[in-house]
Amino acid sequence: MNDNDQNFYMQLAVEQAEIAGLNDDVPVGAIIVHNNQVIAKAYNRRQIDHNAIAHAEILAIQEACQKLNRWILDDCQLFVTLEPCVMCFGAIVQARIQDVYFGAYDPKTGACGSLSDLRNLKSSSINHHTCFHGGILLEVCSEQIKTFFKKKRLEKSRDNGMEIS
Amino acid sequence: MNDNDQNFYMQLAVEQAEIAGLNDDVPVGAIIVHNNQVIAKAYNRRQIDHNAIAHAEILAIQEACQKLNRWILDDCQLFVTLEPCVMCFGAIVQARIQDVYFGAYDPKTGACGSLSDLRNLKSSSINHHTCFHGGILLEVCSEQIKTFFKKKRLEKSRDNGMEIS
Image 1 (spheres, rainbow over the protein chains, first blue to last red):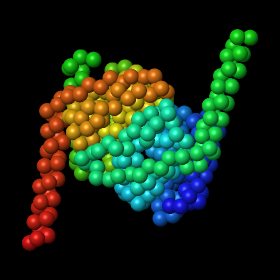
Image 2 (image 1 turned 60 degrees about the vertical axis):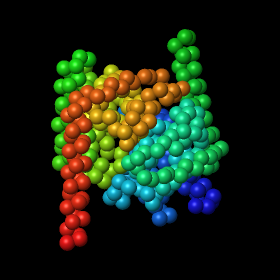
Image 3 (image 1 turned 60 degrees about the horizontal axis):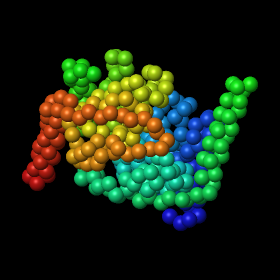
């Protein structure tokens, strides 16, 4: 996939992430592409749904499985604004996603080289290799996350200030 | 939790796994306990739902979150008949499950010491430690999985025989 297409799809994921941020969820968005068509769009819904599983990648994979009526997505590309965590990494492997394009790196929970690197974990029962490509629209994706946490910290310090006064 | 209680809850997970096997899904079942009460029961539904995410642990965690109306399950115990894979391990950590009791070990995909060992993976953003206890009702759980795959191999060899004849 060429750079223009990668950026185009990542921009759609960024728009999904924006919705999560408005819901007070960490702004992460995901898109799944099949035959050059977007078949799933999702955003992190952990807080709003009170659901530990509801990361953007998980919801997008579920939607894509439903659309294609199969659990193997080995002809699909997943775009996500933040490096996948262990759970989402595992879900990507379970679904045999062909290529994963992620935006910002996540030193706190990223499982594709940042906190840990599970990319070379061999499984004798899964004969599939997903390719991971990091840093797509890096600045846009990083800025989106940073802005969210900066806002949260400001709100927290304001709340603390109100408690003291 | 004492051995009798562990075995009791694992037996319920085994019964869930049985349903998965009848659906032609790998027989894995899971139970979540909160304040000595079963609040979620689930079985692997990957094939029947055409959903790569639908492992027993994931479905049980989703159900427990829904019941308790929160995504943090740090006062819950999860029982599962098979050692969790990378995805389910990640989901358990995301949900901050207190204790995980698993039955059979899984050398093919187990992430709690068999294929890989993610138990000591440190995350700077998750300040929680889940305890993993393996080998609960070990023989029952191992036998259940082995019987399923033996049956599948038999069916396959019968089908191949029919094609040849």
